[in-house]
Length: 164
Image (tube, rainbow, N blue to C red; front, side, top):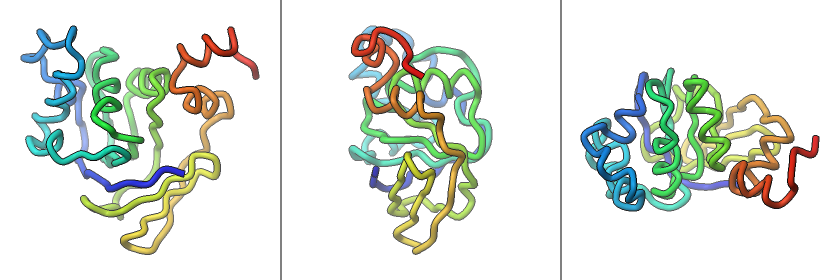
């Protein structure tokens, strides 16, 4: 069970919104880059995000380049999961590989600041603020195990290979 506040974004949040190209010189200093996460979409996000919070977005989250820095700095900033109507395929895989859950669901009834509780095992999101529930497509068991270990590299280090 994961609990935190929602930070709401719209459609088409690109990897350049997440990690602006003008900050490419910080790619070797990820903690510093994380201080600027999503500043082109919301200049206040990095200063107000708290450990466990959620990014809630519309359609096509993470479009653009395939750089792994984008989901990594989101995770480093303390975000526990991303909920979106749809996500760019490569962003989705990068996020899962880095241990950041990405959940595809209808986010229309979640507002900025809503308190959410997510159960990855059951595929449910409880909006505590609004006293309602929504569902997302359950993640395959192997993805849940990768997320439990903190990402693909820690999973392989522990198990040596996929155990289906």
